[in-house]
Amino acid sequence: MILQPLATDSPAIVYLDFKSPYAYLAIEPTRALERKLGVQFDWRPFVLDIPSYLGSARLDEAGKVVEQSRSTEQWAGVKYAYYDCRRYATLYQQTIRGTVKIWDTNLAATAMLWTKNYDYDTQQKFIDLVFQPFWKRELDVENSTAIEQLLDQVGADGAAFGEWARDEGTAINAQLQSSAFSDGIFGVPSYVVGSDVYFGRENLPRVHWQIAGQNGPTPDIGNPLPVELLALPQPPSQVTIGIDDSLDSLLALPQLFKLLSNYSGSLSWVMIEASKTSAPTSYAEGSRSALHMQWREKNRQLNLDRYDSTGSASQDYATAIEQLLQQNQISAKKEGPEQVIRPATVGIVVLLDDELLIGRQHLPLIAARLNTAP
Image (cartoon, rainbow, N blue to C red; front, side):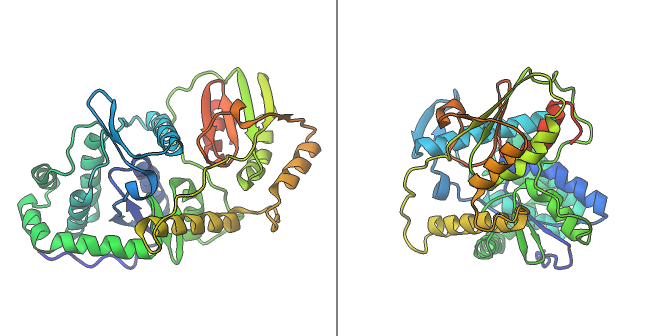
């Protein structure tokens, strides 16, 4: 069997990697968008080279680090990422257990390509059969026998896949990985709509808006939530808002003012310094690490242009934030970053009692936690 050509008439391409918890969390919201639009996206694998930008580590079965090459900042980012992903996994009744090593998912990616020889449903069933047990630590995605058995379960001829993978499939997957990275795909989930690349499921509102004809105002970012949320706790007794001088804080504030207008608990506003990161690591020119950082910076600049509706073309967000606080008669305490602990990142910081949320993409969940309409 020869791999069928990749789809070219789909309204969007979706890239994912089985070892990414963020990709796992994007599956159901992306399918929900397909159903709402009455379309099927072109789903493709993208294999992350995590050590090239986030260092590496290996744990033993007890969760103890036995090998690692990460900085303190990188560890902080990894720990917050799992904290964040488990929060949303709970909402979707999913299980995400931290992995004990950085897995090579090229075999599973090649198998995902193989399912394109069949139909959309076959591919989606395979995606589920890999993601669900993998994040429960019940599947070895580097084991060819295990992957072939999953293909058999969805009717995709595992034995034939094994032969194809050895003959040409592995090379086809490698070519796809190279071309995707050259086209600006550096992380997952990523969505390609026309010539636009969106990194992160928080961009699904804009992906929807763009595919649907760009009618109405441009939506802001926001992590999607299940249609029916599990029972949520009572509203927090204390809310702390940490504000830095970023566009994220500027865009989040008007929405937070509205969400908190009827909040009756303890509310504190704190000015926090922009996260101070160490000098960037020097990467060899043209290396994967250097190119990854270039794509990531380009994505950051694109998002500033896409979502900055404030007219702060000079990016003097600090002045705009100060004016906005004054207009709303809010006096924020001047405190250092140690008062609001976070990984090295920028954006609004919200503490709902002890629950930490960084970035305005969490505003839909914050609204739900406050029992307030978004």
